[in-house]
Length: 335
Ligand SMILES: C[S@@+](CC[C@H](N)C(=O)[O-])C[C@H]1O[C@@H](n2cnc3c(N)ncnc32)[C@H](O)[C@@H]1O
Image (cartoon, rainbow, N blue to C red):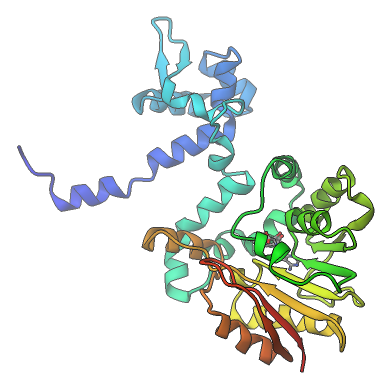
């Protein structure tokens, strides 16, 4: 057997055409159009709003890579491999692959891995001009995807050992808390459900806080949960007993993490507490580390590292709770 020369192997390994073609198909909804009865290039292009001649090239290429079959009359049909590209498939991957989607677009940050390796900063920012959370929160195109996430969250349990925030801290003397960067409200809801005296205010950026507010409104604890739009890089609502940072600092550089802690310290004042429930996600080797770093700063920190940043933000450790493999629970008060 003739060996493939290394230069040829390298060119094959790095060819972007297959991923680009599959992503183009996902973005344009080709599988949905074919499943809905469009079988010719012209009709598929008409439904996709795409250029007919290049659509024809894409469809012929999708035949080459076994995503489409072509019958004797030239009509296209999905192969079994292409079925999960349909939006309504039970294992649909379309949202993960669309270049214009919230999740699909994030994968494109890997194209700027050179930037991440050179500077240590996320390729996402280099590719899209703003950080991941800013982009996914402020683009109206992603509202529908957040809504789906909110509905899915209604059916999910807490993850990354967030249960220790609910059961591993003494909430008995706490009247109200702010879930700073509370995302879709899973933890706010779990806390107020488990502790009937508690009131929670979730603060997050636009799209996420709007969806969290919708979830709260349809919950049975709507009278004790509020969602507000805001940035934790700006001053926070004052006067609450606990400012909770769950799985927040791990997305931010030391400078930004210190600013976030400072904002919590300012709002907590002399009597409030800052409860940091940070996570160190287990990553599965160099590949997943690079994937994560291309999207976010994603530093790995020990409890002592967090204590050092909190000190720089004017906070001192007042209590340390149970650790799990992925999460620490640290309570701070003003110095
Ligand atoms: C990893 S999630 C953490 C979610 C949640 N606290 C938990 O424990 O699951 C990070 C959250 O921070 C929010 N976020 C990012 N930047 C923010 C900012 N500047 N101000 C407020 N929230 C922000 C994101 O929208 C997202 O909901």
